Length: 210
Image (tube, rainbow, N blue to C red; front, side):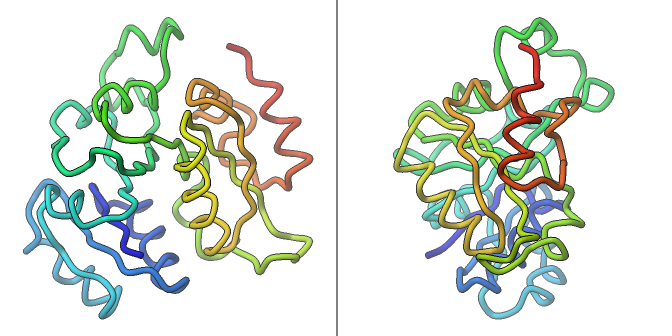
């Protein structure tokens, strides 16, 4: 299976490296063009290549969108119809500017992502783990120290695909429910970037107030 990345920052690089270790191949892209990713692709190895964002979207069986939220309106939407899209984004007003709907709580970052990619199946994941934790805190299945990561989404098959990816790179998964429930593990909530097992994570998710 091939994973396309729209955005190749810290989270994108960490997920890509872990995915390659688990047997996936990756297509990396950014806003500056594939030529700027030559060194990253060299480090990731033969199962990685660089491409334009549109090509990464077309080639990926799963596509990871991992850019600053302010860049969402400029992202290409072609090539994503029917595909699973992982949204890793968080809202930081100091970086992204004020977004009234998010400030008022009438929507969530992933619901905005789903509006931008109306023909894709968006799943919120990897937004609540530090990039520097993705490799070092991964553990084999059955390890009592294995961490649980939350996901949210409206499509059961898309969530199944994302769950398989996350489990393959060393984490358990807790399905927090529909896409709107992603507010429970956005930045500023108790579950955000918590190194928690399933039981503790559920308790932290329940502490989030809508």
